[in-house]
Every structure is written in structure tokens, then in C-alpha cells.
Length: 353
Image 1 (spheres, rainbow, N blue to C red):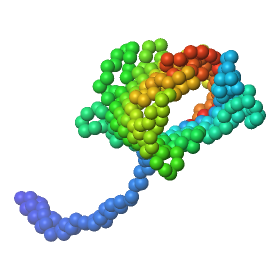
Image 2: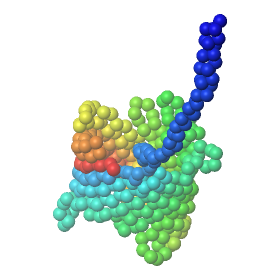
Image 3: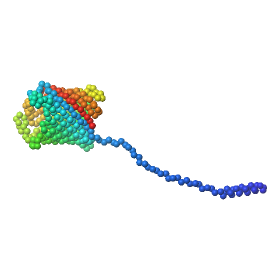
Image 4: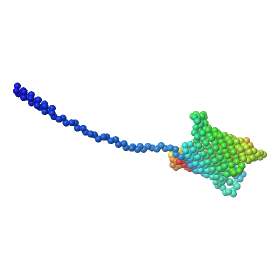
């Protein structure tokens, strides 16, 4: 009994001692604040290419041979001469285009030769186009066109016209495709010197172009113009005077090009060009070598073979051999005859930028 009491007393003492032990406080570890460092990231992207001016430049020389059974002494027809031509087309902006053409004619014969007389003259043509876009919500495209010509006889011509192209409303199928059908009111002014010898022109022009089967292309244009002259003009054999005249001119060109051989560098093509250049009617009669008439025209056919060598993707040279069959001597309708052949040869180069 006594041992049991001692044991219980010992347990009480141990329990009291345990109750007095100090429990250590938990250690709080302070974490450093997280710092977020932002760095600028530069992303390089390909710059979108905008419009860049582009175009073509060509240089060529054309030789005009002797017309079959005709000469200058008896027929007053020039031949055996050359024509050097520089032609440039520049797309200045997305809706502006400039065309420049300069032609120089060079006579190959002696100047004092009556039998072989060619040409020695220069002419310049400048054309400017501005695309106004479509007319309202329609599909009719509007284009302003300005032209200036300094002719080989020192005459100067100019005109402005506003073209309305209805091509998207024209009939098209798998065989015929109308690419141009434009009506254009026009005002023109022609002169040769600073005096009253001028020509004011008011007119309406129709331009058409149609793609035909088998690679043919048909261009048909009409020019109806009322002329107001600064001086009276003499008309017909009777030399009647009038300071006004109404004219209608028609241009018709049927062309084709068929490739005969081609690889990466070389190409041989058969080319064909024919039509009326031009067919002209005048309210007042004009005087021709065979009399007076109110209609004149040049009807021609010009087949040829062209060889092209592609020097680089942007530079090419060519040689073109042609033979033209036309009414060179008699142009008025009532006397049109004596169709003859004339050989033609052209060499040139063309580059794009």
C-alpha cells in the first residue's frame, strides 16, 4: 500500500514538471517581396509593300523598203528610210499613267536624189491618264485622258476627253470578251503658229476592244468631231470656202500572234496585223490625186515573223520582219486601187522597271 502511494506521488510530480515546460514560439520567416521586372519586347515585322512606280521603256528602229512597182519620182511615195522610236510607259501612282513617244525619221538616200526620196523629220506624242474609279455605285469606270502631239510638219494637236467605260455591262462568254467599251466626250485644239490658223474640235469618241477565238483581237474606234476653224478653208475642186466641217473617222484593227517556238531565252512568233488605218468621212470634199472625194482610207494587211531573245527577266531584244500590203498611192474611196507590197524590218529592245 505504501509502495502504491509512493508511485502515485512520483507520477504527480512528473506531471507537474511537464506542465511547466515552455513551448517555444514558432519562427516566422519573412519572405522577400517578389519583384516583377517588365522588359520591352521588340517584334520585327515585314513592312507591307505599297505601290511602287513601274513601267516599260523600249527603243526600236524600223526600216521601210521600196514599194512594189512604185517610186518617189513618178508616184511621190517615200521609201528607203528608217524610223527610230523611243516609247515609255510609266505608272506614276495607282491611278496615274504617263506615256511618251518620240519618233525620228531618217532618209537613207542622197538628198538631191529625185528617184529615192525618204523622210527627215521628228514627231513627239505625250499622253496622260488619270483613273477616277467607278461612277458612284455603278461598274462604269471613269478616266481622264490628255494628249499632246507635235507632228512631223510642225503642226501641234491637243485634246482632253473623259472616258466612261461600260465594259462590265457588255456581253461576254467563252468565245467573246469585251475588254473596252468606252464613250468619251472630247475637246481638242490644233494649231501651227500663233495666229488665227487654228482648229477647235468638239466631238464624241467610242473605243472598243474585243477578245476573239483563236487568239484574235479586234479593236474598233469611232471619232465624230465638229471642227471650227479660225480661217476659212477651201474645199473640193471648186475651192468653196467654209470655216466649219464635220468628220467621222473609224479605226479597225484585227491582230493576232501565234507562238511557233519558245524556251527560257528564245521565242519565235508569227504576227499578223490588218484593218483600216483609218477610214475617214468628211462633210466637205477633199482633193486627192485622182479628184475630189468625201471618203479616204488605208486598208492594209501586215504579216510577219518576230524573234525575241530574253537577255534577263526584265530585258529583251527582238527582230521583226514584215511585209505590208496596202493602197499606198490612191487613198480616196472612189479611186482606191493599186494595192502593193512593201518590206519592213524592225530591231529593238525593251526593258521593264
